[in-house]
Image (cartoon, rainbow, N blue to C red; front, side, top):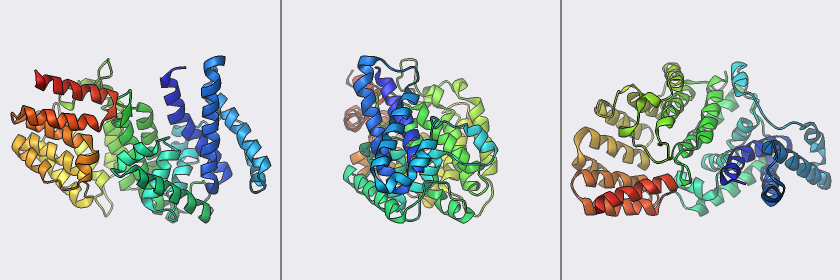
Length: 416
């Protein structure tokens, strides 16, 4: 049984199964839904190496999880009233996202679970963390890297979120009221954003990018942007950003799966259909009474998408957009990205000054791309020793194998 198959099942099918189960058992039993699906995955790991992988692994997991859920419900008095819902759950939870979007509906188990996790009774960061764990299949360590916080902090947030859902008896359903939908929209959009971010630059594992996570984030963001109660300039701005970024995925790695930097990418390989969809969302993002972080990040992505090359990019405009982004949504990660843009516009010395001005200790401690940026500009400034040291610090914080190969290669070049 291949590691790729296990990864796919854990990342994709587990999220679907947890969402479908949680929707039927209720928000108070999200943890139970996770346990049932985990049991199904463990049974697969125990039996498939000896009996062979089933023709339809996802359907096999569904049947095992279904039987386990029925057994638990029959034994538990508080869950017996859920038996009818579980009995009716007879087909694997698969949906047609395009059809759902065309009907302006979001009757989708995974999106319903994201909306439940983002209930006002749950602190926003805790709700987003729980949505990433249950729907995205992320571990505590991965979520901690996304938020640049210790793993213990994320673990506490997850416990708090489940407790709040249980106490508030939150149903796993897309809210019917427009006001309630709109109130949860910011946290739902944040979940889609972080889901895409991890897929676009995986924090660990054998692949640089994880297209399944990116596709799921694009799909969920598109559903939110399409629904009449949650569509807004902000929703369209996020959908635009994700489409424009996802369009670059085919060129981000070479045939061997190794990193291809933006300057070296073959832009003819960028997905034209996704670019067109992104610019369509960007047009619909115009208007409203607020210029959100998603508008500004989509603007930056559009500047890259319309430039024929890195050299021809209007870096002054990119820096201006980052300045506006820092005013709208201050973030140490954004400051790192801005420093890179400053270097492209003004040279290595300006980039290094901008990086040195970042005073958040969590950035050098947990964000490898801060050290990658320093290494790049130190190398450009002629400081090979400093660049090697920075690459070494980045390597120590990097779990994704292609990124580790890239960083080790850069260090070897400097050693030569």
